[in-house]
Length: 557
Image (cartoon, rainbow, N blue to C red; front, side):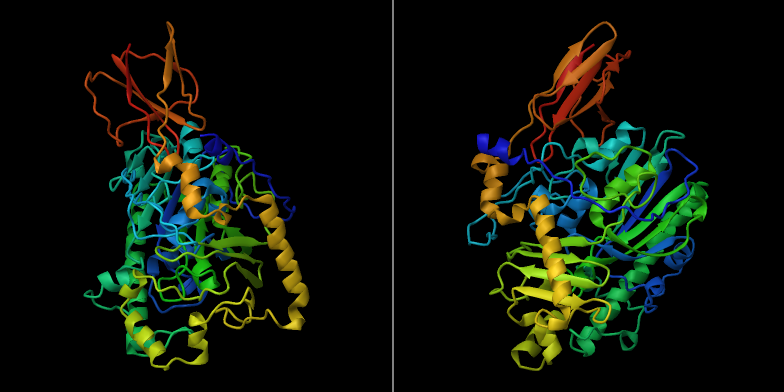
């Protein structure tokens, strides 16, 4: 337990940030409505980014009334670690959420059982188990701050944070969650996740008609140009067109409710595209995402080349909502009243992806990408079973075995160098490694030093073997449990506390004597003493992220 306490008491040193010109949304509301429309697994392969292959009339209309970001990046080229950054404003390497995937907490409130025997190993071959990441005790889901400050928060439906979503994170967290369910006139923060563009839909949607002609698609130079590849790419674009229809329905509902001009809308993808050598990669093909934001009354339009990282999303929403940003958050607000700094670099990591483990770190500025490979003896390509479901993948691998790939296409299958450097403006596919080009010596030194400084100021738990990391989080590989809340009642007020450091307390009043626990019940967050009501009973649960929730305590009033 002593080891656990030390591990969970990491003190973050916030890095220095430069002051520069800011872009702000025009706010006429102290607590504006905010809607996130999140799609999965697409790069900026959309018309507003110069690729009109997929017809997306709804997204095009939204983009015309929005600010389009040309340099938005995830922290990891895969969903679960990147989503842990989005919900906390922290780097996965700080949280210990960098490995994909640690448990099965993917949808709604998460599966609460974790298997011991799974076919996964850490970098040294030690067996690991499923687990829910225990993040530092001072870190919360940022939606908790929104809820405490009067927002109604809904998530429909994916969570996938590398830990089970705590009760405190959402008012609603299920397939029916919607801003329409909020109390009258209460501001909302609502998230809708669109899964139709996910990698798995490249094969699960095979029987759906293609709405994009395979002859019309552009084939990236790192993929072989043949019928199988073109058909898979056409399926991806056809899925994007299906996604556009779902997005259009959310916009229609906003307008029907008279809320379109009163709502800030974010559209983005959780990481880069679903094709081979895109998702899971630490190149732009895996990290760079579309990001479009519509302001209140569509007052802020145009384009921005500002660098944006997923760690910036949480502080930006808090800034837009006029809520102070907690000091521990590692991202920067890029909109709202707390937009004070523009970042010069984004940082990314790559660790375990399913059954294959590695450790890679990267830093990128507006032009150059620098990559540091800690295990250069390992190949770039990882033979991940899940990815081999992609229809074109078997043909791709057979061509490799038969020696039919060209030099560019073979780059993915080569052993890594210890470092890589790419000019992303001249080489957007990151194919020409400049690490030995003397012309870029100064750039290389600058980015090496930038990564060194970043690592000196941010804890990197990827340096710990995952088996040891789990032992630190779950002593004896057993999930810790949040202690029961303690309740004090006087003639008017109810005070609640919990001995478990970092826990959040949830409560509700009821007249039900034998109330069973239900995640979707109307749980409120305790933040200050509450006034007694006429209800007969008070139910209370405390929960720390990564821990089992406490027992549900019932108090007769």
